Image (cartoon, rainbow, N blue to C red):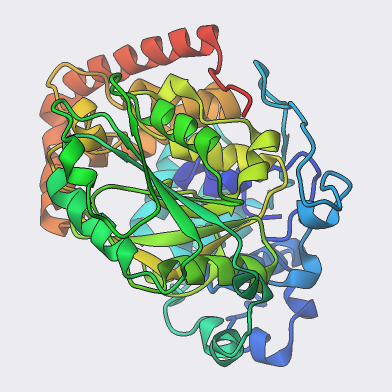
Length: 474
């Protein structure tokens, strides 16, 4: 159970929804933790309700990477997983929007403002107060709760994390899965990026794990067959005329001979133990998905939580490993996202809602070059909020298709309210404070244009919702 006010900051956060099996291992009761783990948390007794105090501690535990296997529920231990190690063919995804159960949030107004003050910039508290007053919530209760939280000091979540406790044990862990040497299929879609793909394949040649194949789905305008000669890899090439990222990944996964799928991008660099670290993570934590972190060289600052293991709230299809059989449960990637954004976000949310468990893996990281030429950026935009063309919809319609499908129109509206103003800062400058301030000042002038873009995106996402998902079976 977390705080209601999180919906104003992260309206489309995975954890705002309950998985179908109603199991939530991600947020723990701090009273059940060891003394050493409790020592990582700043327990606050000033909350008006016990529920608020426990939710505060649970949020910290998640942020600090406390992963408790005894609280987890995995398909590997459920009736949905065969003893033979294959997922049942459960078709929950075909043409339906599964009705999900929301968390029972902490509702106490004062506790919510208290929580916001502890973990977010003070400006966020003012933003939430303004939104609530304009949306006709009880002004006396909100003003009272807000004013009583004014003296609450912000907590530094960066000081210590569970990696300090886990490090020695993890490094000494002898992975039975790695010793078994299951075959891994590395899937790489590529589009007009031979210059960068050369380094990708070179890094794969240096892997210390030998049991893997590489499938490259090449959509380049000018196909260079000779490029793929003389690599010391088990290399398979699929020539795809249509420029379609999710078709490329779906096709490659279907042709994969590996027991495990490792999705990768064509503009990345990795260390020699990359595959090994993904397998080791799956084995150590006994989870379904290992999400390697992506260290981008363009855009905002690298988050602090990329430096330690934690329950993940996203899937990046440029660096993630899972069993191939898992897709019999989830279905393939939704082709409604072709040429647009957040196809991986939708797949990750689908995995979460089906009860699959996903750990963010800092030791299987990649350097993501995010080059401006080729790839999805050639077909679409830098991200889901920043279209390339002046009169293009903002956000990209697929972003609203995802949020409206799973979270509804109200939370999608809150997502737009919180994210659109900052999106006018160019992607490469989004981590620059003074540019963000300048962008917000310019809203006074350009808001009619932004409104036009948002209305256009809303209309186009509505068309996608009427058409329905394009998710095929494996």
